Image 1 (cartoon, rainbow, N blue to C red):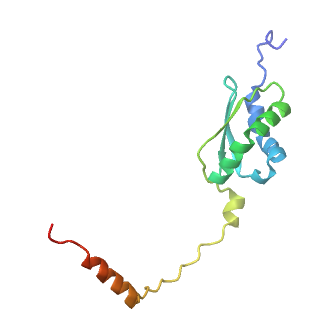
Image 2: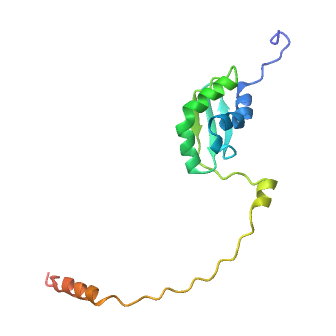
Image 3: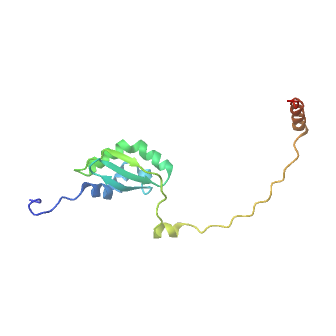
Length: 137
């Protein structure tokens, strides 16, 4: 009936992208809000995600089989076969995160480090080592 009227079924990829936060929270709740689904290729079944930190990317790779199974179970008609973790990118600052960031504090001036003279034993060891050098070559 849909094809007779020239309508097309909604793409499954949109549903996977829209429900990714819910799926992620159900499987790996500690990564909620730290990972964003950016693309889904329905032909290859590849879901591209971007973590905010490298550690979150590693945890995503470990949890990939569970995430793929949960995505296929939650979004019917979708065949997610692979989770592709892209390079980490910081989360985009929205109005809530921009207001939550504290103002940068001025750094105190560093005082120069005062070097102490080396101990006498160190000096003797260096002198003995230098005495063994063969300078005639």
